Image (cartoon, rainbow, N blue to C red):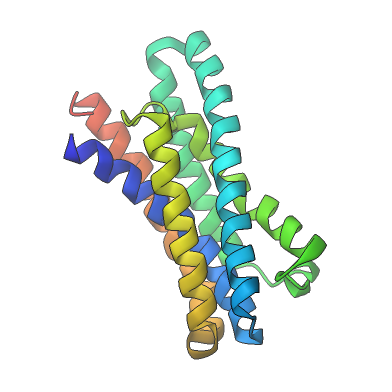
Length: 188
């Protein structure tokens, strides 16, 4: 039982590292306490909504793919992790210069950051943790990493912003591989 909850905690931490990275970037510019709360709630809601959408898509795919659906979902986690690592090394785009603390910039950031959650949602049902529990753990991880990133932004600066997304991708890819191996060995 503890192992299945640990699985979703690992996914939550991996997902929250890109939120942490963006939050560090916003924190470097400085934001008020009220803005920190708004950003944390917005990111957590976007992550949670995308996981629910992804879980619905994963459930439909599971009915079509049968026993292989879990492996397809875990392969998606690996692909998503590799994508996150690659994107973390790309040059900063014009979108990264938007004001992410409120308004359209915050909404755009929340949607962009939660796209990885759509892919995770596809496989979350195959981890073995009830969806509501998974959503609570992932939302909590998102809020904690957002507020921590905003608070530490000035101190950590660009280094953490750039490398947190890369390490999040590594963790997500390794998690997908581990889950696939555990499923193949019938441990999870």
